[in-house]
Length: 576
Picture 1 (cartoon, rainbow, N blue to C red):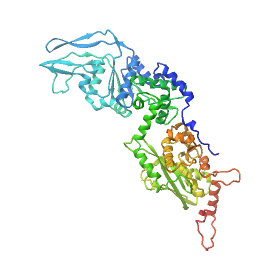
Picture 2 (cartoon, one colour; picture 1 turned 90 degrees about the vertical axis):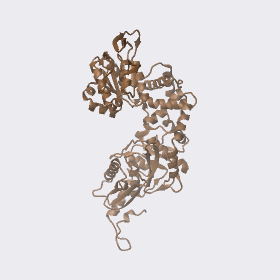
Picture 3 (tube, rainbow, N blue to C red; picture 1 turned 90 degrees about the horizontal axis):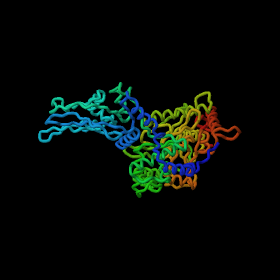
Picture 4 (cartoon, helix red, strand yellow; picture 1 turned 135 degrees about the vertical axis):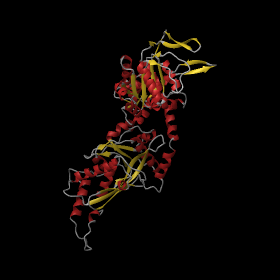
């Protein structure tokens, strides 16, 4: 029933399989977008081929580099065409005639702006020595092509959007005065207009747009720029690597080598928290490429590793200060020996303004006493826990009641608390640790303090996956490292979380040299066996945790008089 530890090879990508795939990707000229952003490409194709649709809505992270990358994709996908231009000819002072300039070359005619003002979009009239000249705007440049604008920008300028909507729907541009109280000093002929409009924005801004323009939103083509891609085949890996190489070329950076892609994949899985899902966010990738290039003007595994190490060091002042406090001699957190009713839980801190979360071990303790069967969650009663944490407590209480199969209420009460916790605790990722410490307090079986535990429990005793796993493991490793590695310390984690592991180099090295261990478990029974070296149940007549608890409950329900001549209902709690 006991779980085996994970080997260090299971914590790193399969180099023998991946390096040939990366080499193939670097030797091809494909962009990988056909599989990575297939929904986006189909939406662009629909905008191009459907004559009755001129509006495309795209959900995207609103950042200038993302809008620029999207504009490049649109430009690559749309066919080049002959785009006629309209210009003004002035035969006399203050007289203007519209003149068509027939195109003599093919162009994509894709224009974009992440923020724009009225003069930049619609143009303006400039005056020099009493003579007025129309200065054309971005809308005129995009005439006959495609214009990409930010939804947030238009929502922040209602008049700008109303005029743009009018011009596009009427397929005609009219010069209007910015101030309705002041007419234009000259009259200019209207310009025929044919523009496909792409509005990009966050989910919130698109939701606001749908409330303001429900009909337009309902009849527009909608899609999303995906932020991650599922990697389930060799071709998916090649496409992802090709996309990385193309992005480096677009930024005019050196071509990455296969080693860089291998190291980047480790960082990518850490970003997504899933081995079979990699980020395809231009913003994320550009950050990694720029940081690696700054380390030696090359894109290699060494340059990226150095960049990531420096980044972690720059951002680690606060985590290191808190870790030193946890490992101080006056700290009650222990990573050696054994204790009854005490366990090392794991939490993740994510403070506002700090660029990344980090793991922090927490001591969870439990005491039991004769009572009415209530399990008191001190965090809940002190209003320091959320509803999800309370839900986890109810689940472990239900599982224990079902396992004990009692016909009446438990003859005990328990008090459980996160020691020295001064902020709100939420989530159910500590429910496995809380259940284990409760069983330890009931059975008087000590828990090995060399273990830390994370995992959620369902009502059937299955251990469910949790979030922030890498940070939690690294947080406990640093505590063990500062208190002294013994070769017996490690983390018990859900088996279903193994596909989320992407640990730091130092933790992988410690696992490799058997200084630190990872034990995946899929049931409560497996975790209890590891923590207390005693099975939860036993088909033979061996001692089990369940039988110990049942025996003590029987003794409590059938009390005897002690030698002093009076009855003590706490007799069942004796530790012999």
